[in-house]
Image 1: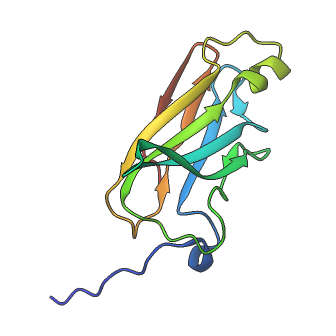
Image 2: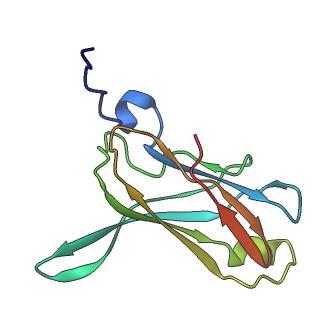
Length: 132
């Protein structure tokens, strides 16, 4: 069987970022809207190691952030981090939260695939998984 290579996933050919997220607030039973999300990639170079911010966004009323990377961005393999800045979200809802932000670190080993990283959230805990 001959396999043809899969196309590179970019914002240009899919209309969405190759890395997306969705936040559901389990305590309130609804999507978490207006949460700031940063997308970083780990780097190692002559200047050392660290994180470089590639994109940022805010969740919509459905709790989704689907445009984290700029148009035309080509996804590369590597280690990425989604930072969910949740302190302001919980403050708006008069809820005291344990975590001011949540970092989800994951590895992209197949740059030609879409990576969806949902977050299930409450004021005192969270869970995440690789979505579709």
